[in-house]
Image (cartoon, rainbow, N blue to C red; front, side, top):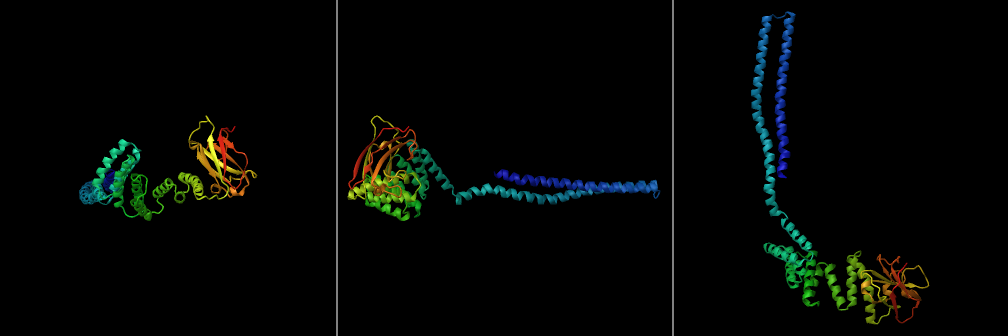
Length: 404
């Protein structure tokens, strides 16, 4: 590219200089010839009118021809001198840009090595290679060697240690991953990126401790939350631990924070569905029956085999007012059947809940389109009308019929 830049500058300058020299010489030559021709015509007119004789005419014509030859010769000599002067100037005009252009590649690379971001570019290559590995053990091992060498050559850079830890983690080497994550975090400024790396540290420590929080892990978690209270990885870790320990109140609190952090994500949709279940379990533990409770025991008919990932929608509807939104709803997937779903006021999806009705009926829908509205080919079951009383109700539903 530098050579092309030189050609773009030098070639037009050379063409311009050459054309100007040729044009100047041609103009001078044409002017002298024109003057000679004009004077020659005048002498012939004088001869024709008898003002001068033939001898005098021949003498003046010879002198005119000598002057023409003399002028052309002196112009060529003068043009040579001018060319010498102009040549020096044009050479300077051409050489200076050429020198400057040639200095670009000679200076840019060492200056970029000194002040540029070549190391960051190389780290991004390591990052992309780690992503492209896609859990391939052989590639992860190769990257561990390559990134380890790079980390040794750049001990002040945090990201090589981070990517080294990522590959350790992909191989299940969580102790080694923890050490590399900690090294990366120690080299980082206190910001949101460091919180992300500290979350990885806490997760690796949590795994190696047998999925139990220790004071050391909690200290790392607290440090990360001070840097970024809404770090997704930390919130997910806290929510998972609360769920494992059946601390439903804490789990619901962390799930709500995760929903706020990314309200339109698929994870938020799944968490919204899990919160009512956790709330019902919490209410059961506390002996709280906040309004009517219906426990739906849902299963597939014997011999009915469906895709485990098909979504299942369970809803309680007001038996005396058709066309209204469900009073309570829950969704799951076929792979989790048979299961028991608790419907109560915490699972309300509209302006009304179970307490607003005296009689309801329960529907369960397996949707191929993944939506709560039934379509042809879906499977659906509907219960009899249920009178809501004070005690929790238990009903059984078996999905077997396909919609026409």
